[in-house]
Length: 340
Image 1 (cartoon, rainbow, N blue to C red):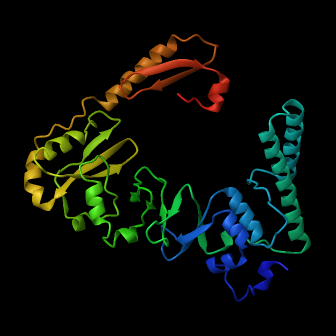
Image 2 (cartoon, rainbow, N blue to C red; image 1 turned 135 degrees about the vertical axis):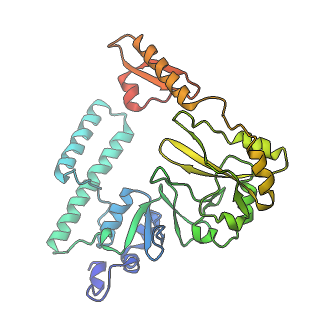
Image 3 (cartoon, rainbow, N blue to C red; image 1 turned 180 degrees about the horizontal axis):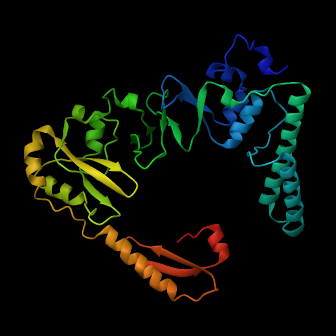
């Protein structure tokens, strides 16, 4: 009997609690599945997987399948075609590259998992089972290269990878991990933030209440550093000038597609003195980013025009100092990815 048949589906919703009742402990631990409160809606749960393979195996397991690992198929892939393709590749590899043990093992595993997937689908069909999908449960799914558990409460999930140009990273504590906004709101980390982010070029995570930290902004318009002319401000001269007068400073940084803006903050008791000092600071970074980009592109164009044709792929790398490195690369190097 399948595990789902033990439940009265009319009386039990497919929620996170039901999901873990259906999920064998062996699968749970093997794929390091984690669950916590959704970073976008704390009233909901989220489950974190380490790979699409884990999603596939979990999906089969919650339907009661115990016949071994099944293959993951993308919507554009068809089972029989993938099986024929893998068997053909294995035959060619064994004949032409018998020492490529890694490729042989990968293809053998792929074939076995495709056969298991066929058996799983046949088993579901012959028993008249209606397949339950992870998407049927009342929670969102994520992957551990984009989300982590909060290292402080171990309840909330934190997004750790950008999902827009304006995304800013949450607080990260070395050797511990990321911290959710609810734990930040307790105020227990305020002193840590004031000490860790003082007089350095990095942004206080925007979950923090700057007023609670006792900080005030002293610039009227945000400074800018980016790819357009005039976006050449640097924070280092600000640190140097204000620190020389015993004023500590902090930054807030606001990223966008082609530039970052930054604002300067000081303790409230230093506001008047710092504001006066800031007006005397020349924040020009010493060069124009836009100008260097233009010079590098012109140099790349000139150098590439002098390379021989039909002898390789022309490759140019524009450097931040306004220079360009140009050379020919082979098709093999281009496909594998140019390292430098």
